[in-house]
Length: 379
Ligand code: PHE
Image (cartoon, rainbow, N blue to C red):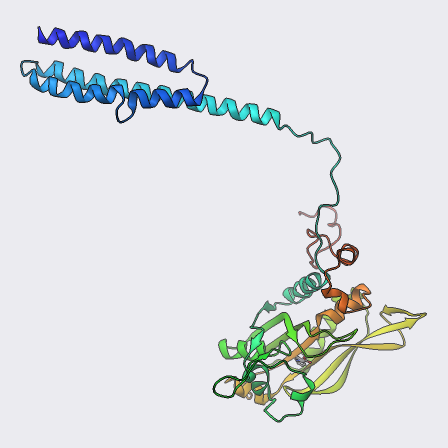
């Protein structure tokens, strides 16, 4: 009978599939498993072909009762699932075994001494910038940045240094070639253009510091054509000279780590501030050594002043409503003073011996929170 003929075929296949599934669980090679997958489940695999073969036959055997038909279809699906599952299960087992074997081979002896000498160092300039940011960050300043190649307007004119102003000569500016309209871009000679960019872009109150590269056509033991400055700007309704002094005294003492560091404000001139003051810190020069702190001498480290009303107007800020202060300092200069680095040129020579000596440990991130916690304090 046709039904029993089909039954025989199905029984035969059932046996083969059972054997196959049992066989798969014994296989030890991933290549062999893949070969079995292709032979049985691939596009021209045995079960795939069987499906193709059975279905027309089922159709031809019109006499076959619907139950038998359904049984044949179901069986085929069950076999495919069984073979697929057996292959997957075996693959996972073999993968895991391979990983375990690899890990066992690669076991590290954590009791061996650490290999030293591989760690890099943080350059003193980067370290000093991070320290300055940490201190002003605590005071609520945000960090701002601006382009190194700058429009004349931001670097000079808006800062109350019009063309022909003598201050332009003092800046030893690097000019780029003339553009079609006759104007020339400059390599910024200070970080002050970022004051202008910030005031034009944002409404007061403002409290920013701007660490970054600056450029002047100058080269000797204390000057480099590329150097770094950090600019500060505070604008608010009632900001006054007392805030300027308090802020900068606090900064100098925190930066040099001397709580009673003498700080002096000396009248000065900058076109973009009025009044202007240069800031000196106390020091002692003795036997060729320089000691920062109380002493007979002074060291200049900062330029500062109340933002000139004309600069505020240039940025669309009403000087009758707002005022503020600004300051700028050379990062190399304060780094040299703090870390006793005698020559500025060495900063850029990429001398590894120097960097190993003066560099900083990468994970020693500057912060104002240092030292042991008080007993009982939560970390
Ligand atoms: N831009 C000045 C300089 O480079 C420093 C400065 C900034 C002075 C802000 C006063 C206020 O010399």
